Image 1 (cartoon, rainbow, N blue to C red):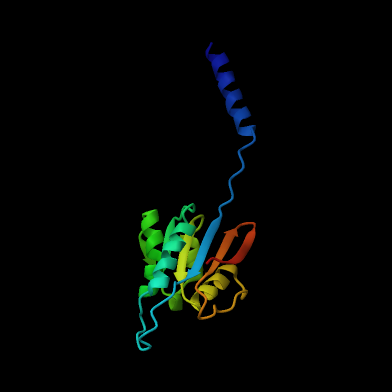
Image 2 (tube, rainbow, N blue to C red):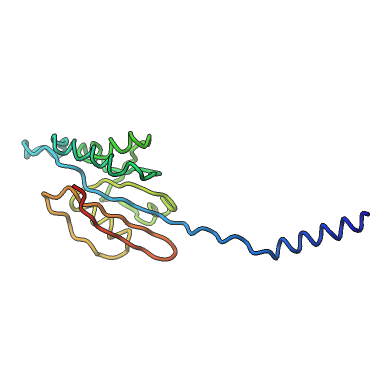
Length: 170
């Protein structure tokens, strides 16, 4: 009886190790990048203005736009206008806003930290396209016009390659 059990056990181990292993799901990182919403422009000397009423409404509209997306992280620069743009979405997703410095960015470390995640990044007219280009590894996008707060860049990174799309969300 013991020999029969041992033969059956060995057969089970051999056959199960020969069985086709399920294919590993490819790890995909998806980045949604936006510029901050419309800012207050009454005081030209203020380097850190808040959002104006239109900007506050746009920030709420981003929250609605991203309603069905499960973000793992939300990043913003430490300016009032970017934090205020990210806040409604962060609150809706129950996520803390993480801060980054676009002038001191290690893109490889960022990609490694966020590997396999879905991430929202809020930046500025010049830093957002630069961030997208860094993720892609080439200069595809130019700075955003000063009166444009509606661009949405979606970048996907995987072993299969890198893709991006740009849309305007009003």
